[in-house]
Amino acid sequence: MIGMPRFFAQSENIKDNKITITGEDAGHISRVLRSKTGERLTVCDGSGFDYEAEITDISDKTVVLEIKDKKPTESEPRVRITLYQGLPKGDKMELIIQKCVELGIWKIVPVNTERCIVKLDKIKEKKKIERWQKISESAAKQSGRGIIPEIGCTESFTEALKEAVRDGMAVIPYEMERERGLKQFLDGFEGERLGIFIGPEGGFSTEEIEKAKECGVIPVTLGKRILRTETAGMTAVANTLFYLDM
Image 1 (cartoon, rainbow, N blue to C red):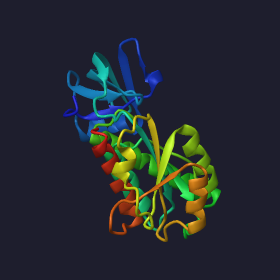
Image 2: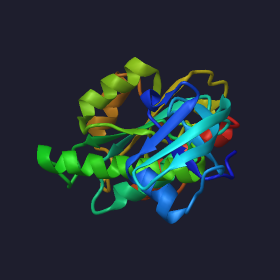
Image 3: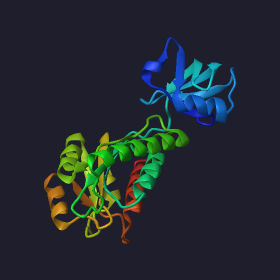
Image 4: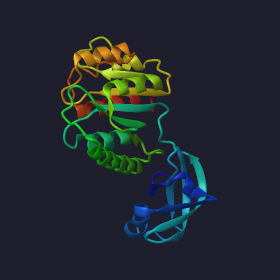
């Protein structure tokens, strides 16, 4: 099923053994893929289920499909990882979102930290998040995901810490940490959720690390080399899923 073209549909558009796809996706199916009635597509409901469905009616604006099979998406990790990413400069966030979604991230939250250079006002933030969410959707389709990872609204470092420890355990990669590696932390880990904090270009301040530790967030090292902000998150997510065999 993953080999077939893959699309997402909202739950309200999946009923009575039919799926209705509208908007840009309908245009893509009809004009770009040049699909015809009788062809099959993979449609995901965004909550972890895949449908193999056959096109019964198609136009540039609407595609109607008949459900032939339904099964859980096989590509979703057991552990839901949230990346708390310090706002980076330029278009680095777009790369981070794309690659972390491909790897298996559950959610990405932009975070304002002490050393963030980028500051988003409410208007810029709304436009940015809309674009970032589209990048997440595109990457989810391409990589065969069962969900479209959410790109959350920008949070302060304090807000992010509270959210992370409320939802489960969290780690904060830190270049000055020498004793505990990510693998050591993950040995025996059986939780369902994990938060990963990544700093912006300038990293985290000593005060922020201390604040994180006070909240129960655990500092870890990602190795002997200092990674760029756009590399660190991807590395932490990839290694976490690898260590947990996902």
